[in-house]
Length: 558
Image (cartoon, rainbow, N blue to C red; front, side):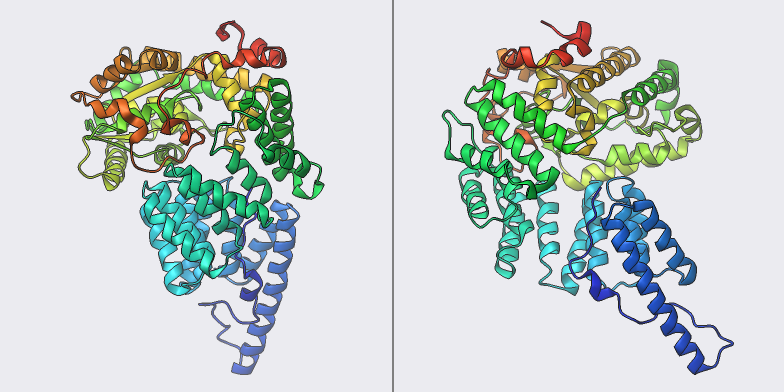
């Protein structure tokens, strides 16, 4: 949950009527003015209370207070804005609606445009995101948060070079601002400029700016062959309770990364476990299992075939799916090195469409009922919208790759909306794959990865759903085994390009020379030639990961 509020939040709590708020017509003018001022003052007090409740993580109470304000003062922009912040990370669609209403009521408020733009960015809607963030900057050119947000938007849109001057400008305005101090090295790292990123991260650490996050980013810019001085410093930081649970999680994962690089595996896994415990993420495997059951029962071969006639036959879309850390970034880089292919990174567009249709991974949704309401016209419209969205990123590309790994959950929907789309399924040794997830500081969207047993059980559900899709689409899904790609890069790369229906190009063998942004944890690895050290990596931790191996059952190749 993000409790993000504008830096000058209190400045908006002025005793004045809300824009567009109508005064009672029957009251005398002076009475109207006094009543309006009284109501505005009462609204301000309530909104301050909502802020305090939100900061105390009493979110439902904060929401109730905001609705009380709206009942008194229809469309109060600040009440709408706070409701938008309450939805971030839980229901981004609801946040979009509230922020849009706040913008409509007070279009001159840069913070409202900024928050609307940032939320569009969360759901991979880059054009409106950039438009609203730019509008915030038009209204307040020195708004550091907006400069950084625009930098992040360009980076996510594969325009990392355009992000750099924005972060540099932000630093000139506010040299110690955490978003700018970490945003610039993040953008540099996404472009493969690891040395420059390290310089900026070390400077942030020296000046005590976002120390846990800076250390975590720093250790992922380099593979260590001997113990660096940063390790002792990270371990010292872990003795400071003021870093909080999020900071402790980042520091434990940073220590684990260095210890793993230097082959001190038992110490490394201990830190990874402590990092995941500090994060405190929980995942309901039983609810997820029931959702997978519903997907398998609903998306039968007969249903998909009958609905696919409403989709659009374009061959432009390519979806790379699978578990995170299964080789999806490497596969995308190989494909995107071809001159006719554009790698779009991890897009949330398909999941947004699925959620709107009621077939996303909302564990409480009735998937079959939701799917029954989708008309042929609606399916065609959604498919056209998705194709236009892809074309916006690369108008001339013959193939555009979306490598959001968890689109493996939505292959049935892909088959209906985009029946000629190509789907590449990245598979990796189950234990290696799960260990590689466990050792990274994923966000709450990957809450299944923080516990070894839960992770193994989740993997079994992923495997069960993928086996179902293989039956629904026999011979249509290209399985790209990570170990096969590592063992014979050229042969498997040629198979990939052939599956895309394109002529071979030798540039695909030098994927590590490709320009553009890489915004995943694999950004260091994919700048290197293929290496084999990740195969059977789990054996380094074998005695410490037995709960995972037992949960995987027959999928664990021991």
